[in-house]
Image (cartoon, rainbow, N blue to C red; front, side):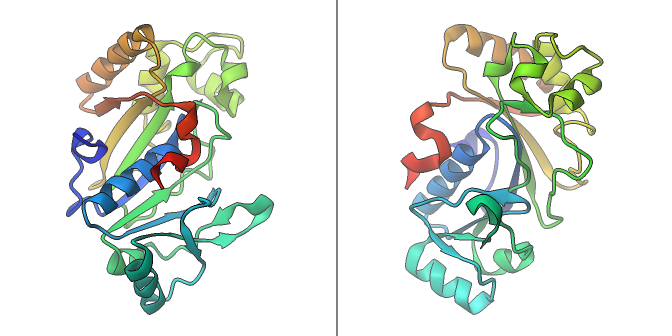
Length: 240
């Protein structure tokens, strides 16, 4: 089995996938890219906001279709973006062009500063209208930890949950955030398939508790994948 099949994603139908949330977006994005390439697909990795460039993937800032095709013919998987502040990549906004030249386009749609859980700000996430699916991620290492310590933009998380900053994160909090159109499901348009991933289930207890969250999301009609996340995989370095 693979991430694509476990998430019930079809490489022919879900050709542009945007990842949002926290808890391992980048690693998951490159795992999807690796699997797509192993299946013989060409892949463009990009962002609608900012990402760190992958040190082992060819990078171009030129969205001209002929140039992208040449790069894909040569490398198979490439990154498209322009270097901006703090050596991070900014997107070029050419998702439609990317879909015309690549089999698969993977887009990072927001940031979390390596925190496992978040509620989006007013300006995020940036989900391109060309997206066929949206994956929302959350790390299980936020569980039982104080909101103010473990969450990205903790004030927003506390306000969303109507809890103080020192309140511990619970299973029900994950369900509320991941299922809400004001939470992780924000800006997911009609026609875009929505999936959740619970990451960092490194112990049997965390996996058991992730299964409780997944069951709650399933009752709301949301398919959720539980997966382990290893520190050695941070940034997707292990995939290329």
